[in-house]
Image 1 (tube, rainbow, N blue to C red):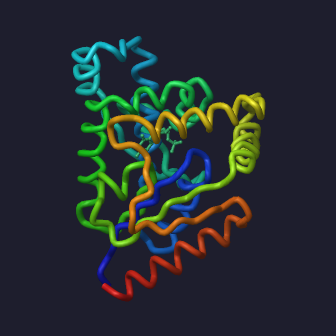
Image 2: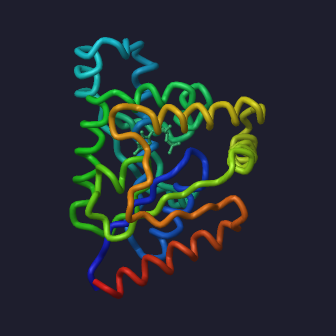
Length: 227
Ligand code: DC
């Protein structure tokens, strides 16, 4: 059967990655969390005190960054590897979330990440989540989705996730971070977050996780059958 690419864009923290991961598993497709790639670059920039306003330093640093994903059978998760080091936990921390939008707004960073993402999906059979997948990375994706949810619902979910990992967080701080990232991501000059014309919008505020996965799977199977 012909494989398709599924582009899943949307606001921060509305369950894009978990949904994409579950859908990919059901379809036996590859799941790629592009937010993790921007987070890994941000972590590396922070660790190496890279000046974001110095284009030469940014470009030179990008040359020394290699990002991979490995499947951890124990956790059932795809984990992010930055230059051979597993950074999956570190990149989810608040200090990285607070710096990721300015890093993701840099053109050279986006050019490097988009090239890798297009390579990963060139044989199709990929579920990729991010902000510019339907608009820039795979404008020819057979299925494009745009996910949203209210800020309150997103913040509550994120708080539970972080607390489950032992991180102490404050709901207000999470809401501020989500809203500020949405604003920065959708107003930046380079590949801003937009809902492309042919994307199906899914508001997950009142949806159970299983229902949102089912919704995407139904749409995906319709598209696969039509290929
Ligand atoms: O999906 P996430 O919240 O882990 O993404 C982290 C940040 O990375 C997000 O604030 C915007 C940026 N991002 C992006 O600019 N383009 C993508 N394709 C994915 C993420």
